[in-house]
Image (cartoon, rainbow, N blue to C red; front, side, top):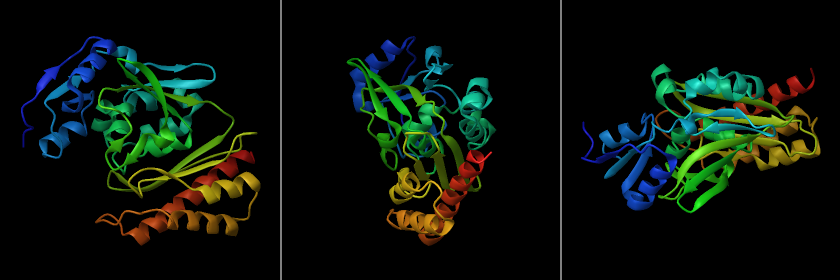
Length: 282
């Protein structure tokens, strides 16, 4: 199948790209790797009159240690993030996850920004970045605004990005937290994933799950328990995780029933917590 006809734009600067978005609004879509967007267009699930190719914008591929935070350009591919020595040193779980996304073709061309903006419910990076309390920087002709990764995705294929905004980078605050991401995969798709970020003095514990609902979700009872009792017994943790996941609107589809996915979500959440605790004890 072929997508409907569209006008192709290839801006040479970020300013030119956001100007095009301001001009065409909902009729335009920015893309770089196009691994999900172009497939959706070919299958008739999405249609745009204008495609804005961002590949000529190398400033959006930068990965840098900015001291208090790690900055990752929205056009950095999964493969580039996985191989980057700064990411591997400062956030090894992110490097490891990006090295396992989908398949080699997707990793070599798909970008972290595209993954976030497409908001596919089974994608892993959104849950991990929400658990890391990352901040997404969006730019328009009016300037920049910062959006927490935890509130960026609002539903399946839905985000808070306005039609005239371009995601330009992800800022991840560096802390003493131990971070662990666990997932269970069916084929190349995650059926349940969870991130635990624990152990930083003065910072709340964070437990998030992904791949089980329309968007990543925190486990508030579990987080509160670990904040109050870092050494909470396994039985109490299991009860808190189970209650949190029971409150979510879990997907029920051909890959896994809702009940089975709840079981898997609890499994990976508890594995992530256990992994962090093991690291804290070393």
